[in-house]
Image 1: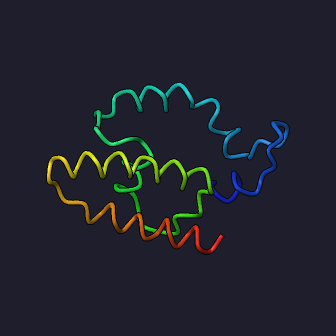
Image 2: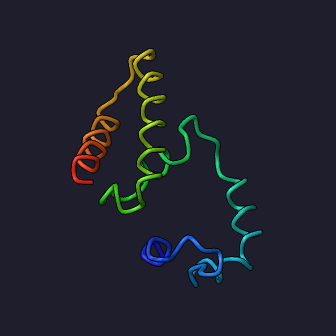
Image 3: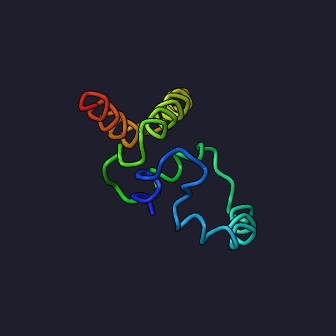
Length: 102
């Protein structure tokens, strides 16, 4: 599905087929999302830390930009609490590598 989204044009007339098929299930997905437990982490960072590791740039420049902002906020919070930041620093290294290759 990621490949379909990335390779589609920005036109609304070329909505990728996986998204067209998800449309009837939007209500179910939304209801499930609302039952998920709350987290102090922002959404992109939360799911990046929970998910599989892989090419951070595969989701695109906007995702990486948003993730970087969320990491900055979480880093400040963790520093004030003196919590571990190693997982955030690994993501920062991936983001720097992404920007160096773009």
